[in-house]
Image (spheres, rainbow, N blue to C red):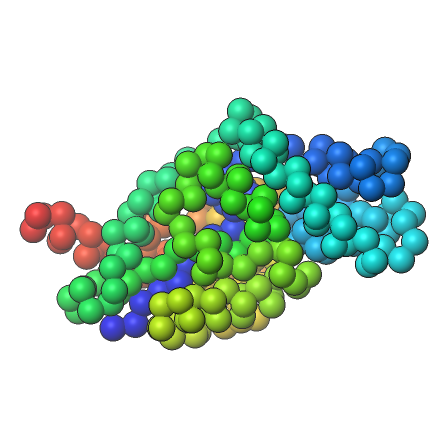
Length: 256
């Protein structure tokens, strides 16, 4: 039985980090260039590599590409302190922990399930965050334990979110010896960038209107499913894995 790879966006899909990212970029910029950062490039749905490049270009830094890796090193150095700030000011979005918990019930190998179940589910992330920031955000708010962070892809690996789908699939296939091609990979996110990346990678796209993008903007990107939020766990499971998931959960609960 074929399983599923569920790749979660982090910011404004699973959590609200407390609006601290602009400040973090400012701290790193000041440390590298000795002056105040005038503005941060648009962040929603984009990778840190792309954001850094546009931010440096907007700040008038010559040959900005030469400084991207140093900026990532600066973000990495700040990650522990940033995690403490997220712990104090961030929050898990409604339904996120409940959905991760429900999906974790399908984490056993596919052979452990009967024909009525959707098979094994591997949960990881597909995020524009560099990995150290992704780890401290999820860890600070208690969500890291639900996710295999080695099976995901991060914004320090590539500028293009589309490429991250391929990288995550490859990592998960290597770790679990399963085929997650096509719609066996499910990308869940709150921006049209998430939807377009999923569709370009022939993955299933589930959009959640919990970020800056409106439901209409998300719908225009063409997701397979569009949710207002993650609050209705059964509805979310059906959007991600299909109706069989909630039916299986109900029958399993009645049988136990």
